[in-house]
Amino acid sequence: MRVLGIETSCDETGVAVYDTDRGLLAHALYSQIALHAEYGGVVPELASRDHVRKLLPLARQTLAEAGLAVADLDGVAYTAGPGLVGALMVGAAAGRALAWALDVPAIGVHHMEGHLLAPLLEDPGLKPPFVALLVSGGHTQLVEVAAIGDYRLLGETLDDAAGEAFDKTAKLMGLPYPGGPELARLAESGRPGLFKFSRPMTDRPGLDFSFSGLKTQVLLAWQASDKTPETRAHIARGFEDAVVETLAIKCDRALQQTGARTLVVAGGVGANTRLRERLHMLAAKRGARVCFPRPAFCTDNGAMIAFAGALRLLAGQHADATVTVAPRWDMASLPAV
Ligand code: KG4
Ligand code: ZN
Image 1: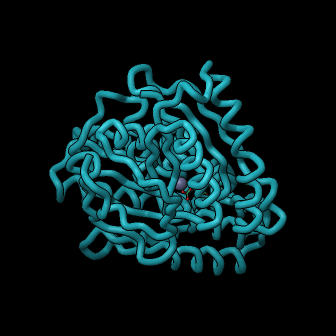
Image 2: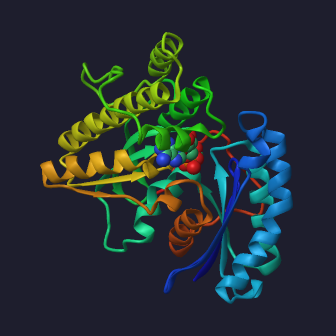
């Protein structure tokens, strides 16, 4: 089954074709970073309009790279939520209409399930049960995955998501949007231990997170500092170490609590080099396994949507003929596959 995947939940237009027999055939991504940079964050209306401009050319390009005609598609998957409602509507309307015209089934995919399943895309041997750490710009969650579609939330952030904390912290130190990857790059040249920030909520039991206080700690340190580029790098390193260590402590607890032997990490912050290293260390110590998608599939992309959609379409699930999106959507409410 050849499935076209469409991702338009935020500021990235992603398209891919996944073949359930042959794997990923092609994928393409268009990032709106330059469009939103001058506003310091995503402007929803501009995002929607740019998806309208870019989606169809990107879909044509992806099909051409896969060597397919549009009539070769057996199904269409699009991100139906969570995300920006206008942006979601663009992908959902195009995907639903295309499927209707081709008379093939369509399915609305949960964006975070797309992230969660991304590591399986490149490692067919990877199967539940496992614990997933989902760390994106909008979510920070630990999820117990008993089977595909069977998700139990173990813990989540009470305020900012990990990626959001990276972005806001970068912004307050004057780094351009999107700050997360830039802050991580800067941290590479910072010295560890010069600035020590707390590991929020690790001093009490439980698997929830809170990252908003960390941002305030950084603000105070930055304001009291000499504001040189070197100091900024040292602070960035201190911040990154605090986030990474906090995530690692909670992952360790989640593995212990569930008895799982595999940790799966996904979402934009999963591209962070230091987080990857730290979780590899943790897994080695526990005799467990940790799996990440390649960095390009940690951040938003069409491949994960094509893959997650294909699994559900293959199981006979599909959406009805209406264009429906869900800006807020609880992953635990998804049906099992
Ligand atoms: O999954 P994603 O592409 O979009 C959402 O679904 O939110 O995640 C984007 C988030 C942003 O907050 C970005 O700053 C963060 O992931 N991010 C990183 C890195 N690359 C992306 N954070 C830390 N280190 C990175 N290397
Ligand atoms: Zn995402």
